[in-house]
Image (cartoon, rainbow, N blue to C red; front, side):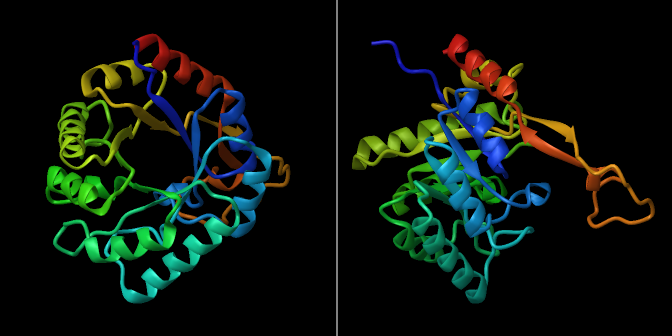
Amino acid sequence: MIPAPPLVEICLDSVESAVAAQLGGAGRVELCAGLAEGGTTPSAGLIAAVRTAISLPLHVLIRPRGGDFAYDPAELDVMLRDIAIARERGADGIVTGALTPQGAVDEAKMRTLIAAARPLRVAFHRAIDYASDPLAAVDAALRLGVDLVLSSGGAAGALAGADMLRSMRERAEGGRVDDGRELVVMAGGGINPDNVAQVVARSGVRAVHSRAARTVDGPMRVRRSGIRLGTAGPDADFTRTVADAGVVAALVAAVAGGA
């Protein structure tokens, strides 16, 4: 039997992008806010609106802030509340991750988060790329019963980290043979239609993660100078990054052609 091509997941932060991902043929979406800081938890309203707009499997990021992944009890409480909201608004899975200050997977906190999320799917996000030992982190994910690990292989991008991704995938599959649990390693970080086939060929992953986006001009015609709400460049207040159905389709085609 010919194996199915890797699943394409699109990371996005708007209803518009979710619709584009579905039109482009994506297999799943990850819904976030705050993508400029690596992603934070989206609002209850956005989760509900995206769930209404698309039929694709919907994973929701549970990350209470930017920065590192060592959370205090108050932040853990926020994450548990956000998981409850994601469940109520129709999410199919959550995407989260917690590390200890020493760079190991915080298994105690993760068990609490996973218990709150079930029976939804649980993905461990790119916090794993900040772990002191990525392969030990995969072992921890197996012990926890995580369904999915998103990683760049600990590199700046998935292509540079493809060899480590292969090692992580082999570690995950080896653990699955022992205990019957499935853990999928998904490649993410700088993936685009031009490099995705190479990433898949070198790593052997069964899923890939991309923004598949373009920058669009906002509708505001009055543009005051000398004011900036964030820390991005001077035009950031008047542009948006959105998923593009054409880029998504090209990514899906490249994955299928390289499978």
